[in-house]
Length: 169
Image (tube, rainbow, N blue to C red; front, top):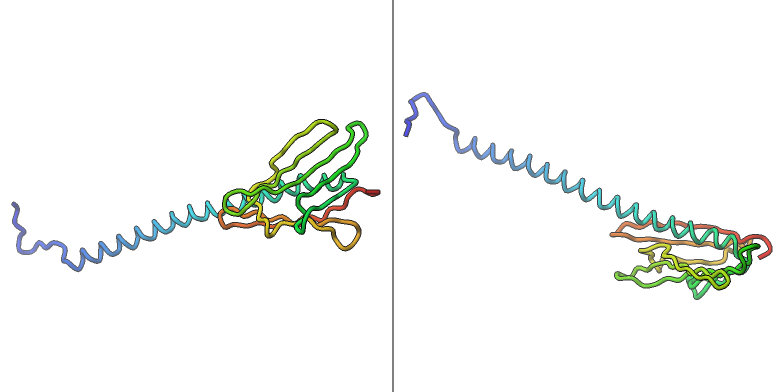
């Protein structure tokens, strides 16, 4: 073992404690930054998913209501929503929008489309908040208000669509 000469000195206990403290502060700051980046990424992703869900709902419901000759909203929220029309060359159309429960109290918006004897089902949107989603008749001009809210991981998005059925309906 090598002996220290009289004029050589090592680190004092205070210097070592300060070095450990500074290392801990820097490590904590880096850890918090990484955590915030991942947390923000998740929140942004959840919000974008909610935005896409309400856009999908508006994308499907709006043109169907515009085509409809008969619009029959269901119970107090307007669902199930039944839309019917006759189009030249394709026959009689009936579209029924329903909400189905999914885990966590949210719902899925389904679209059933009947064209004469053909039938198709489409999942329109998920994560729909039933308490904030409605289809009601507007007070003026024969328009309908379709309000839809999607909630994903605590991030919500709400859109309100005002849609008028085609004239003569």
